[in-house]
Amino acid sequence: MPIRRPIITVLGHVDHGKSSILDKIRGTAVVAREAGGITQAIGCSIVPLSTVEKICGQLLSAIKSSLTIPGLLFIDSPGHAAFTSLRKRGGSLADIAILVVDINEGFKPQTIESLEILKANRVPFVVAANKIDLIPGWHHDEKQFLLPNLNALDYQIQGEFEKRLYALVAQFQEHGMPAERFDRIQDYTKQAAIIPVSAKTGQGIPELLMVLTGLAQKYLEQQLKIEVSGPAKGTILEIKEEKGLGTTIDAIIYDGHLRVNDLLVIGGIETPLVVKVRALLEPKELMEMREKKSAFRNVKEVFAATGVKIAAPGLETAMAGMPLRSSAGKAEEIEQFKKEVQEEISEVLLEETGEEGVLIKADTLGGLEALQKLLRDKKIPISSASLGSVTKKDLSKLETLKEKNEFQGVLLGFNIATPAEIEALAKAKKLKIILHDVIYQLIDDYDAFTTSLKKEIELRELAALVRPCKFLLLKGYVFRQNNPAIAGIEIEVGSLKTGDPIMNRDGKLLSIVKSMKDGEENVSKAEQGKQVALAMDGVTIGRQVQEGDVLYTDIPEADFQKLKTLKQYLSTLEVSVLKEIVDIKRKENPVWGV
Image 1 (tube, helix red, strand yellow):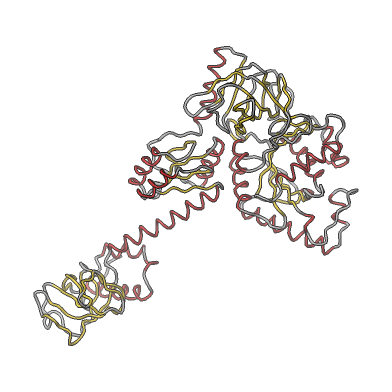
Image 2 (cartoon, one colour; image 1 turned 135 degrees about the horizontal axis):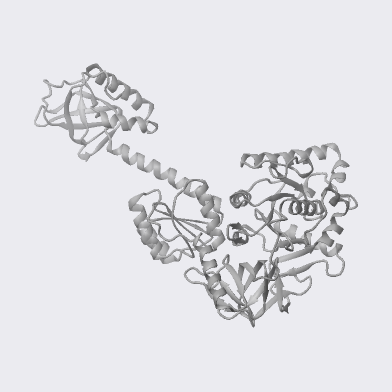
């Protein structure tokens, strides 16, 4: 079986140079190419092996085996949103990724997200440590490769470079990924290779291409084998409106071949879509396909691995990230492909499972899958997973989930919007919706929500308990001796509330707090330092209780057990009074509260 080009995608934080690196690879290839040395398809740039060999030169001697891959295919739509659309059954469509990190800034939010997605999808990757040209004192000799140039630098500049590089290595280590400079790696299967580059000057680009070629050649040969003559298998990268063509799809074809007039079976949320290919389009030679003015050329067929713009009637409901298959039109084959694509989707879309868990939504199938994987890694259960913006039906599900479990009555949405009326309805019903366009930030926000909710629930529990309180029955402030007894008190430590049981220093239950007044106002709670009038049934002041007595709340044993688990919310003085109460109780019952 022939071997296709490895599909390489580029990820990283905004402004760290993803597009610039792709542009520089393309530009270097254009400069180095012989006739036809680089071609551009929709969504990708194809760099043939001959062009890679010309750019890398003697560097390729480090790859011991003879090269059999036909070249490299770079995805031209960099960014995490595009990457999450690049999926096929069982994982990512990308064979290798380039994670771009600014060597001067280090990890940023989307760096962490990209790393998490790569790890979740088990995609091998290399690190392009970009912007080395901004290191103070750095200079570039165009006639030399990266390492000789580096060794020729002043030792202080080299020291500054090493300092930044190993700060990056430490950040990868913190996120559970060993990394090392590419020429110092002992085992490429256990360490991520860091290639220092400058997208501005092109320094390090030959080394980056050399490492990518070496990895593909050594580790990916088996998975790059394809069926050239078979039906196309692919994934939708983007949906676009094109003047004169209507709705079109930009797709990556990773197996087989696709022809004009083939039927295309595309996965759908409820049912698959079947359309007839009217036109296959590619940009003209060396045109920048991301520019809307790009001139296209019609082609009759395309072969994997490549990207292509497909025009066909009926593509209006197609969605990014959906799988596709081509067919010459045999009814049995079409039915089989319908089944295949829907099975692939059903692995990601989860209807209500009846299980407790958060509700998740995303804009693409790949985004939904990435979110699922990261949540499962963190042992966060999922009750349902679907595509599109938040709906009234979602809010109904949320209400049911919240009634069962407050922690899981939450909707997490990746890269989606909430219509204003739905947002207002959710707010009125006090339903929690967390949206973000960075997956890891979404999960961090959910963690923050659960931490806050846990505290809120614990404080609610605490409010229902009898808390430790020590108070003084003030002398000269007896307003009624009994039926009920009313006297002035001062709270020395803790807080006292209506309904709390009261005991004396001997642990004898005297009464419960019937009511309290602060001046003319009835209050249900009195805090430390407060003086209030306290009403108690069942006691006579002068008999069971005396002016000047120190009294305590009579904490039930069950409340004491709960207070121990919520001790972090008690003040140091409250904890001290709690110990006094325990000592009083254990004089009568040595195992009280144990």
